[in-house]
Length: 345
Image (cartoon, rainbow, N blue to C red; front, side, top):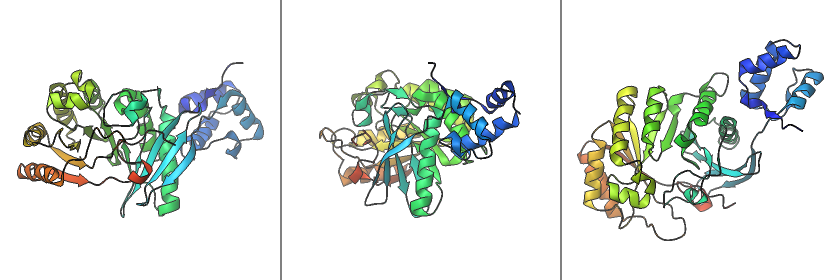
């Protein structure tokens, strides 16, 4: 028996053609499309403006491979982590991060990760597969529903900082963002979306050529090649000089400021030379630096740098006119903080 196709892989025009080829009106495709995306229908039975015969015909031909929140954990600081079960029983994690003024969804783009950062729990899982656009979209819908339920406000921001390297799932991530920002989907502003990459130069350039409207963040952690390669081995292939060239290109094409995410570790990147290298790296295009608190992943190889080292970074960056924020981690008690997503559940 032939496997049924996931109906959300079809465009609106393909849905319209399906109905016409089955002797129905094209506008039925519009109705189904609205159910799938604006209303996030998980079954054909809920499509109540379609006849029973039409719903049965859809069920005979298609499936809706929606996600399921398998387990939800709530942190003492209000953060919520979802263990999300996919249609093939693989699991990814996504996180809702609330503050007084906003609710941010941190979503995953891959099961596991394509890259090999030594300080990240997700990287140890290796990549099992890319997420489809609808699976990324569904994570956002689930977190939006939770935000409305628990915080009485809609989701305000999205960051692609969950499991996986978003640019290694380029087409599906862009298709998901297109649906999230479309009036036919969630209608969110692309300015409220940030895609975080460890730095894949040719794909950063491709994003610039594709004239994307969302924001770019780069997980940097060192502006010295030898140091960065020791903690992010793929840097041997995607060097800092190549990354710098791609980011210059990005800024020239988009006029959009770059955010650098940066963890300071004891004995790794906590010296003055590390700070000076970062200051130099920030100079070629308008940027800001988020200094992120380190979240341990059990083996003790990486240790949070001293308060004095963090103050040295802040002092030197500010003296050189570079915007810097020190970001406290959220959801550490449920392994929901940056670098901790590893499907322990």
